[in-house]
Length: 265
Image (cartoon, rainbow, N blue to C red):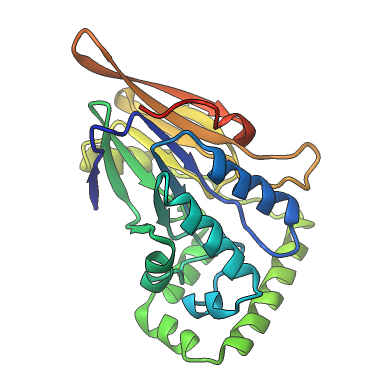
């Protein structure tokens, strides 16, 4: 997928790995406040917006957490363009959710043309080549047959499975598990293939800027966890401006609370 940024876009935000769940009210409120106040013309959420997503029919539970999240997205879509990408936790987000929230679902990868640059957008998990066990699991659960078999189960059963998955995830956080990072050679090769110089991704929860071969770069997004000490939440913001009739860009990393307060152009 390729997206050519419309000329009215002068400011774009990127976030990922919020892992929204009903038990984490602090992160939910920080996210909803950010979307309500952001001055960005477009917001790209590059995977794992949700800790788990069991199917778009979860939104039908009027008092449910998923319904609240959909309401936040729908309200934000009235003043900014919203794009969502699958992560390793919410890969069952589908067209019904996108329609209900007025969002667009991105392919992984997607190339964004903005400020005379090509930006490669990914969740990042597919480039963690050292995590062979996970990549085998990813291939399984991304198959249409596995997904249809799972979605055919009753919603109550899927929600119960999700609770069990969250418990396993929390338990794993307290182990000495070392997670694989993005493979630099694979990232560089993909950038070259897609004629892009910048990779923006999440997944690893290791926010940083990495220089790659041939003057390319890898920009890693932060996860969000307002319960942590210190709290974690960050927005990667691209701004475009004209200098001597040429477009140039700046990259900022800002707290969500500082994302508003500017007039859109």
